[in-house]
Length: 127
Image (cartoon, rainbow, N blue to C red; front, side):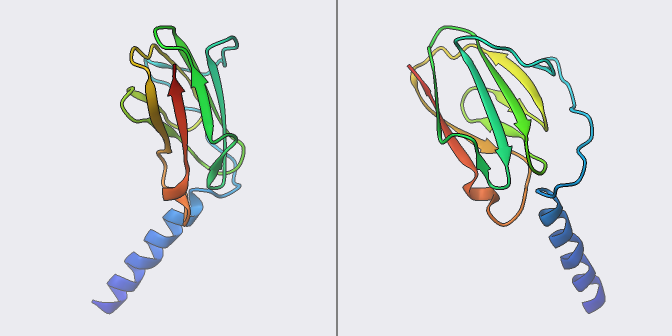
């Protein structure tokens, strides 16, 4: 019983700490709302994720206009969700959506990536 618990703990720790490793990343997964070609323009957010941080703490866009979010993992494996807006990108890719309501929305890393995963957040401000 003790060996099983110890083995389970070791496996769980290994999974947590490999989330932000520097190993090669598999190809980005795509879904109906996700693309792999990054967009450019006025309402485009380029998020670069590295171990336990994003390239910016705050991003701003205009309400009522399409927004494209581009995610790139510069270090480790990361994904994002934007609470309240239905945005979810797993690994690298892009998603376009139209925010209707002005406000502040939390961007979070969606792939457990180690000890500071819970602190990996940013804010999307919709004006």
